[in-house]
Image (cartoon, rainbow, N blue to C red; front, side, top):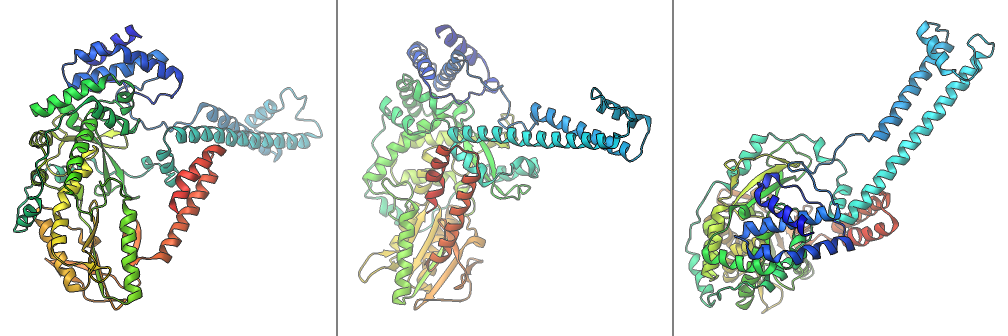
Amino acid sequence: MRGILEEAISEIRSAPLEQRPRLSRLPLNAATRDAIEAANRLLPPYLDGSLGLDDTGSILFGAALAVHRFIGAKTQEPGRTTNKSSDVPAWKKRIERRISLARALIGRLQSFRSGNTRPRIVRSVRIAFNGLGVKLDQPDIAEKLTERIDGLKQRIAAWGKRIRRYSERVERFRQNRLFVSDQKRFYRKLENPTPCSTSPKPNTADLVAFWRNIWSREVEHEEGPWIAAVQEACARIEPMNPIAISSENVADAVRRAPNWKSPGADGLHHYWLKGFSVCHATLARQYQEAIERKTLPNLFTTGITHLAPKSTNTADPTNYRPITCLTSIYKTLTSVLSCKISRHIDEFNILSVAQNECRGGGRGTKELLIIDSVAGQLVKRNRRNFSAAWIDYKKAFDSVPHSWLLRVLELYKIDGAVRDFLEVCMGQWSTILCLQGERLTTGADDRIRIRRGIFQGDCLSPLWFCLSLNPLSTLLERSGTGFQFRRGGTKVSHLLYMDDLKLLAPNPARLMELLKITTEFSGSIRMQLGVDKCAVVHVDRGQVTQSAEICLELSNFKTLSEAESYRYLGMSQCIGVQEVDMKQAVCEVFFGRLTKVLRSYLSGANKVRAYNGWVMPTL
């Protein structure tokens, strides 16, 4: 192992990133564990001489490559995409060729039986009866021809069944292997068996230009009169203590990360950070130095963004969802920072109770849906007045100005060294676009610079985004209006999960006040409302009333009728949750998934696991 490790580390240190082989998922067996432990014991001298975070990444990648070579695992060629080859297997080609020749021979035999005695046909018939002792001038030649044709047809049927049997065996092997290695991907294939490669692709230039126009167009926020209320609410917050990163912090962050999530530009999975535990102390020291020096290599601020289609309209450049893969070392750093910042937020109760994301011990959307359901039941049962609005933001995660992100950290008194470090990182953010495994932006100068929005893919992004919208919750709560569940009780003005916002009010006038606060704040931080996806509903004495559309700053919000509904947090709503419609929709999803699992080629044990992990959770 020592010689293999030395050779692999030297090779990776001297090779550019583009020439690194792609590491494969290793089986979790004794041989793999022994090889990783052996490499882990040999790494300290290399890590002690590491010149920085990028050099540490090269050392860890070289160690992972050495483990592959030591146990004989395969690595993929550099630059090769992960798309599976669609070539027909050799065994299937051979059988199909036999079937094709047999069908051609049947046609010639039938032609000879019909009286065609051309030399070419006669020669084919003689070849067909070669070795069977049959002559073409014997009296029962017609019966012999029929027997021969029937025999060939039976062979064709047997070969067809063999193809089906072999294909089922191959599909059974592939499905069970995929289920064991990546259940999420297996479920996606069950949901959408048609490969995206068969769908039309958008124009590459249009696709790159669309996302470049969103991310690379820098904007600045404007602070209106509302900032005074936010500053007043933040006056009670004390400055965050300076952070000190220890090896235990790194170990905790690495332990929480998934093993085999798609890596970033360096190709290193979190699995190797877990296996090579001796690197945690080195990473902690280098993380601390990076924060104090306010510098980070560009490798760690460069992402690979895979574009996933939202629907079957794959030719539309706007119909794609970006999924960014970042380096494991950068994600570990942001995980540590997120943990430190979360403690500061929890200590001073900074995050609004209405925001149910990024809150420890919360149940996510379930709590919000329960609150909404209770409100709907009270309105119907007690025949109360009620108004609500569903707010949708256009590209919310990708449109927050960087100036506002930094201002939020300042308002909530995050450690100054962390703020300065994150500002430096934001200035270096860039990404490489990929579609179906093919890179659309290759050169360093062709990368898309992230001058607006939050860099997706790391652990700090969700918390940072929630903080950017937290002042809106402060303004809505200070408005003094909202839906009151009981007399003298707390007024609930809004429900918020990331950027999914629902406003609650006792009447249309109060709802208009909340909408004005929302639009004023959103306009100040340069976030646009998706008016075509926004809606309002008004209830008078327990009955939905149809009123004119709400006009707000040249934007019309659709007013729902009693027969219409709005999908919020995965549930159809009008007054609360539409229980009958949701039960029917859930049943359709449940039985659809159950049918797909039962018709799959999974083994019995894997079908039980799929039922428990994918089918039952719909209920």
